[in-house]
Image (tube, rainbow, N blue to C red; front, side, top):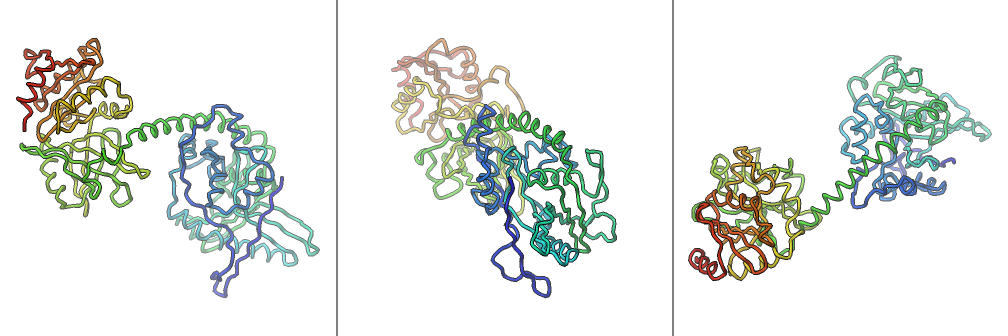
Length: 551
């Protein structure tokens, strides 16, 4: 098929500045947001159907304004990227700047948003196009020169390939007969290495190409040109290099035999056997993460009330010092709060704020007294990210960075998601505890122990017997008092692993620890030592609560 572009000729004043006109050569595209809410089909024919376009659709897409929703969707239907000119050499493994693996990852989730050099190129591309057209018109004074422009060109026979040309050159005779059709590729290098060059030597130098030839085009641009000629069905390309000191133009031939017999089979192989499997795995992981993230969503009643009007709220203060602070991360470029990895979260607070001043001593003290509950707002929803300790605070300009830490095991456990896989017995136990401890706060499965946090996070000690789980099912709290319960549906499940974890929590000296077992339920008290461990009936448990938990 053939594409029909549009000829937009801008008007320049006597100083070379652009006058106000209705059109520009090309609208510059936006950075695309890549969604991951849909799975990638497993069957090749299903993916091909998503990529497929008819000749009519390809023509329509070729004239879409760059940056529109339709244009973006045409580039990545269902988030499946097509191979375009800018990534072509890297995907095939011929980029001088990055590995094939990195190029594939960049196609899956683009991270490059441009820099000074790319902005320089974009800012001067239209001017360079005018220079090129003026030069071609000067060489063909009796003929008509057009430079047409497109959005995205998709090859309807190989729809995983697409190309956005800088221009399509047409030269007409005096009688209006079409004499030439060629691709135009424009480069405006902004690097000092190139942009101040003088003389007739090729600005980019001479480069070897994989077809056994060489010329004034770097290999990544040579692959781009070959793809463009294939998609647009052109036999050659004007390679225009504009720098402030001069404009160079070279004619580069399309090597049809090499493209069809070598490049195209390689592109098919890499796309279907490397890129698509990587994309499928990546999408599945993102969907899994998203489902976990979504399942941590909270109702407004579950978020500490103070976070409705502030970024922090002191949930509890203990008589002996410390307590629980809730922090809310609403995102944004200014604060730059971020999850560094599964065990580290960086949270920035205003320098010299009351929280900052209060926590400076905490950051340097090995005896941690404050627990941080982290909440995050995203997609207009609040999510709970678990409990953390403060490892350090670092002053940076008008902000103080709080470095919050927890163990990998605690993070893994939290990823299993609070309240999602709760058993019926746990739900019944929570109801029982709410009646046994009226007026107390009951939290299900927090990352519970200050002592364990200090051992594992701060001192780097991994306790062999409890590697699988550092959480406790319920913590009942009021002021400085914490009573912890490990919930099991039957005595068979309340084995050595569960008891070892409870003993570890007890020996930290911060919690009174119980096992709560079965539907009745039965109570197992861990006391202050192994010798004091005992079972309790309900009347004994109620007596213990009245004697030890009245405030």
